[in-house]
Image (cartoon, rainbow, N blue to C red):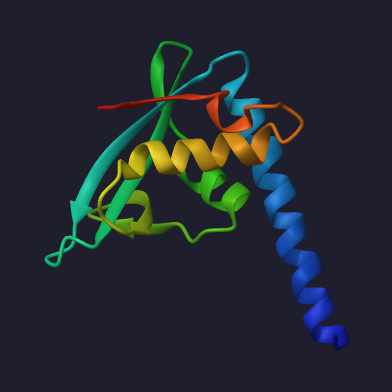
Length: 120
């Protein structure tokens, strides 16, 4: 591995760790993550999804921090932060939250089920 490639991998790892810390801080004791479907592509193969939590009585957008924690890209669709997910045949909101939970709680036996997902 070249020095440039190693540096890029190290930086990506640092961003992921930072995203994980930020999501854990935003979640606190809360285990409910809300998902909002912002757009479905014309082919139906791609969905743009935002993620929120309730904090201090209001909805807080955690999409950017989740994207960092998962090593995904966060983009803008209609002025909203979204993560684009490809695929069909399953609940992609559940898929995102399950993967997030697995990343946040790797020491747990059923890590993917530590967080709950609900559509808004």
